[in-house]
Length: 189
Image (cartoon, rainbow, N blue to C red; front, side):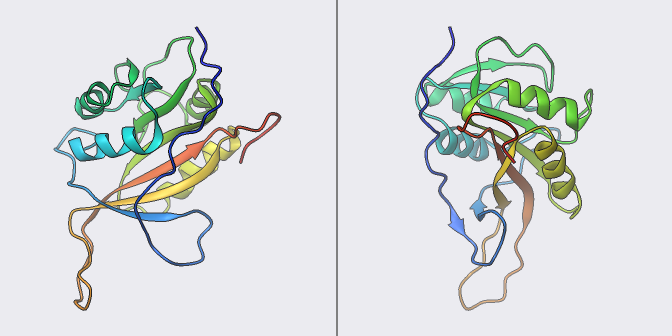
């Protein structure tokens, strides 16, 4: 059964960092993932609650059980798969979550498959290890070439700045949010 409900995900929340950027840049106070996993439990909860409504379908392509636990606790539905596998089901999802880099598909193929698997207004959350300044740019370019729009950039950090003190952020993950436009027609980006 196809979800024909055109509602969008909830408005993302977070601490917006001021500046003249092409997309909103948020700072999320979230613990780093364990070795070999895509995200922490807190990251899973934030993604599910920020970008879906109850009963929405989520495609989980992440390493580790954190997103699956958040999906179950929030009463969402999911297609749980081995990381980045194909055959995501016939029903379109509101949210697709994946780690990066990809193991078995080119970025162009992967994002084309994501776009085809999303409801209009749905999102893809790509979790990147923080550090390589060119990697987010490469991901956004590949997503735009597949017809997805760059909606939001979230930085997950263990330590947040303390007002009045010089504190270095401990950023561990870049979370890129890409979306399939709710408008009909061609490329979204």
